[in-house]
Image 1 (cartoon, rainbow, N blue to C red):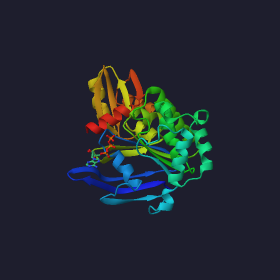
Image 2 (cartoon, rainbow, N blue to C red):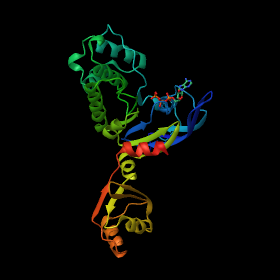
Image 3 (cartoon, helix red, strand yellow):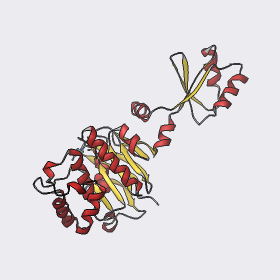
Image 4 (cartoon, protein in one colour):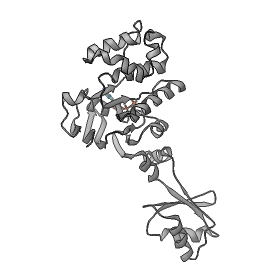
Length: 295
Ligand SMILES: Nc1ncnc2c1ncn2[C@@H]1O[C@H](COP(=O)(O)OP(=O)(O)OP(=O)(O)O)[C@@H](O)[C@H]1O
């Protein structure tokens, strides 16, 4: 089962192609990051799946079925900074939100508790910190206990303390089994919070998959021998060889498939090169992202 499945979604605003043929699947229970720089199409994509915008081309399904109102009610959304009433308390604001969304008022104390706002529920909204305001917005999205949350840049504009509060809340919600789809332009956020990622650039999907796999995708092996020119020629003949860089006296080699270090050592020895340095290194998501976007 997939929570959300996109098939070739495209959207144009006049001359601007905001999305081009985007397809990926969001597995249940994942924290799915839609990662991309400003203007890459994240908000447009979330607008389409929440029925605020229409795609020009392509289709998507929710819970393996064509999107329908009854399915949307299982999704809580936070698409932009919500307009709470500054002079009302958090509790009163949630009463208003529950009435608008036709969700039960009895749910308010539960969502306040989850968002860690019970003690401050009778404080006016205007007395809240930015982090508390955003946690209240997430509490509002949680009314009715949806199994899926869609959050557009939930930490945008927050100070470091607010960012930490919101991230902790997202992780707590993920632990309860909810699927969370969140847009972010912060690689660090995706690495810290998400289990899966789809990377968008200029409306195109660069890659998607589990964060661990995306991280592992750009592994490289760092090695050197007595004569790196000879070693380079040996490595270039390896059946899984992809490309090589020379850095700080070492060779950095990317293979097209995972290689076992002991086997690689043996391969070099068989070719007459005895290695004096051999390490596997993982590129950070940031490096992988920069490399992909440069390409
Ligand atoms: N209503 C609109 N009319 C015209 N162009 C738009 C409109 N909304 C978005 N765009 C353009 O579409 C592209 C994608 O924008 P979108 O807001 O989806 O990206 P984003 O990744 O969410 O960016 P940000 O992080 O800055 O919000 C951008 O070039 C943007 O300028």
